[in-house]
Image (cartoon, rainbow, N blue to C red; front, top):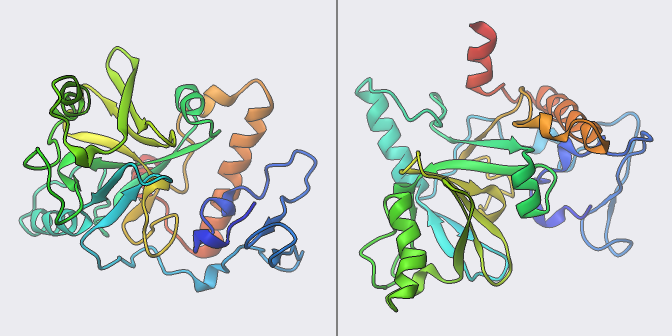
Length: 280
């Protein structure tokens, strides 16, 4: 694994136990044998960066927007985290319920582990990481001009803007290379039509909500974007049963074990939803 450009190590903390023979995956900060290797030491936790150098779970990133970009930058959007934070704080001050995917203490958006067959097949990734956001918090970069007044507010409007606008010759250029296909009757999977990056997962019965691929967040604090995301540590991987019955069963169980070990060593709290389930 090559982890230096992740800044925070990305998903590497929960990938230590992948090999069934018990050996540890080798990691480099850059190119193999051309950069520093993260060496294993039985007397060390071997996490890079060290857990003591990472911010605590309550630390929030003080920015208004975070770019949502694919590798080729054909999809170039923003996550309006400043607007989301202000609205959540106002709701909390009035005693109103927050959206279900918002941490009640930090007001961060939830990020999760997904092992379902359809996500694996569409992305080529064994365990995919999504975050949940209301569409009102997804937007075009500031100062950009286009045909739409703003980013589509519902999943139906998004579908029409991406497909219908193209058919009518009125597609907003700020949508870039964003495309979609229907993986089920009521599900659309959005992707970059040039570099194939997964972008959104959309279900018709959640018209104001989308799953956003965490890997597209170009956050200054690292690939996990912990300054704006609350990670679902302390529980089981969603749809883990899809990986049972073959070599992938070891993979998903090892990810759960390693993620929990890292969470405990770091002192990162269990996600509030897991705590609620355990206390019920």
